[in-house]
Image (cartoon, rainbow, N blue to C red; front, side):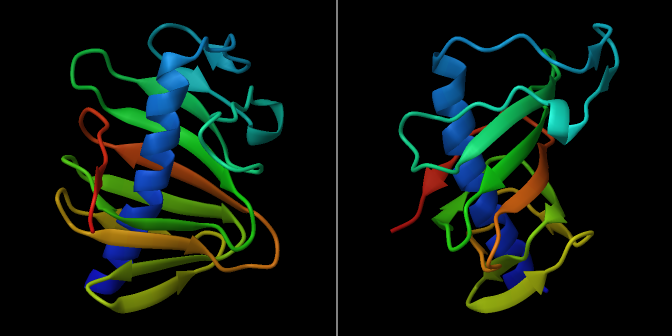
Length: 153
């Protein structure tokens, strides 16, 4: 279970790195419902962003960010075979697999998540994530505090 959580956290790192790069670039206007308090978005209609520092196929879209807590919700897409190296975050992370198969690794223990699979990755838990399906992986990811990502050697 801990390995699964670590792997999910690693995937989160990749998304976080992509989002930190995305935050520096001009952001497209949200495509879904955004009332200032509530948000509703379909992934097929979302304004996906490709971070310049990432390979082709890596995309994300920020769904909601709480200006008080820094909590962040995103959709993220990764190409088949893409791996997010070991990393950790300062806040708790949650991942739900929408498409593909995601392998989460925590402390050397691996767990493969299918569509509908869920991972909770505690703050400061070292993780590594990989899209192990033959097709892309689409994830919903959430951090309960300000987003950061710390590489682990």
